[in-house]
Image 1: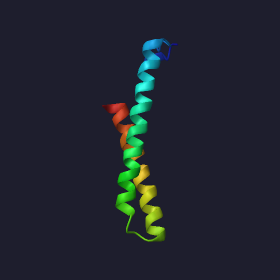
Image 2: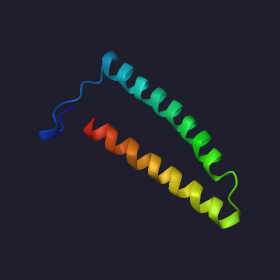
Image 3: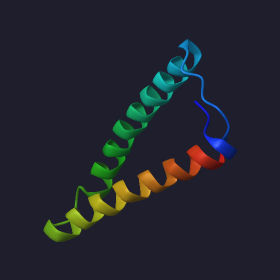
Image 4: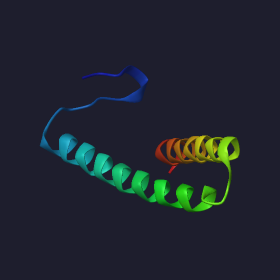
Length: 71
């Protein structure tokens, strides 16, 4: 599959193996982030807890996207 200036993707075993590795690593990091966020907001009340969970999850996603594209 030709993606223009981004290059080509060949849908073969190597591609799907790399994709599966990325998905597994992402799931492990997501679980780890959930534990850290839960510990961080444990003592907050109501709205602050909700805000903390939302900001923690958003921050984790932003950092993961940045690391995926620039690492």
